[in-house]
Image 1 (cartoon, one colour):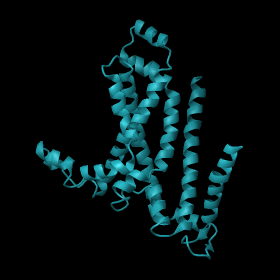
Image 2 (image 1 turned 120 degrees about the vertical axis):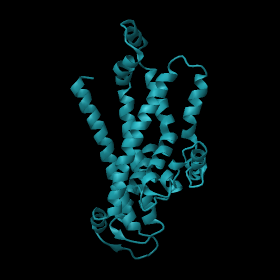
Image 3 (image 1 turned 180 degrees about the horizontal axis):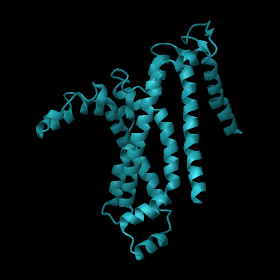
Image 4 (image 1 turned 135 degrees about the vertical axis):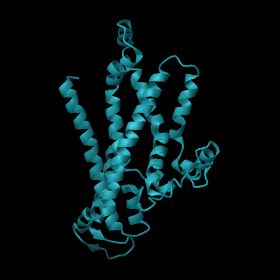
Length: 280
């Protein structure tokens, strides 16, 4: 009953209230909001910034999910082997996960500034021609945000893969080695299929996480330059709070909720369909 009250009384109520606000033209403080029906949603479908944010989300998901999956899987496989100081490596890999974005954002802003440490390093190792204002131009701002996200969350992927690999039957691995399978072949043919469930779960989390991305792009670039790092989360905040278009921001929030649910369900359905085809 407490859990039911918490979910219905807070979560579902807030969703319903947001849905109601999405039908209003309201600045958040006026006592007489104007009902516009589905007008906000019609405006969203014609909003180029909304579609730009969706495109950024798709690219962001593909790049970060692929990078985090590959790096996390390799780290987990390496640390399941006999590596000296394995515990220390685990701590080092996982540490970025527990660092608050508000703490690391100033560091990365300074690092990637035009006069920051990255350009200084490039200048002093003979690669000065690569120096550029990383956060001040559209072509490099998004890759920087992706890099920060991969650095921040690969540790979580690593931990989940490490735990999943620990559930694989050791006798299966030993039998593969006895039959002459190399380490690479064992990873590809036995370990990777064995952690498929974890990969699906990470895919669902990554879809939802990409759609909810807010803190890193907002704290590092504030969605700029020229909307180059604008995501739905940053757009919703900018529309709802600084611009005081609460009704339109609520409609964007409902769109975000729908896209997150559709994305997560699509990943799960695709995984179940593939499992049915392979008989897993």
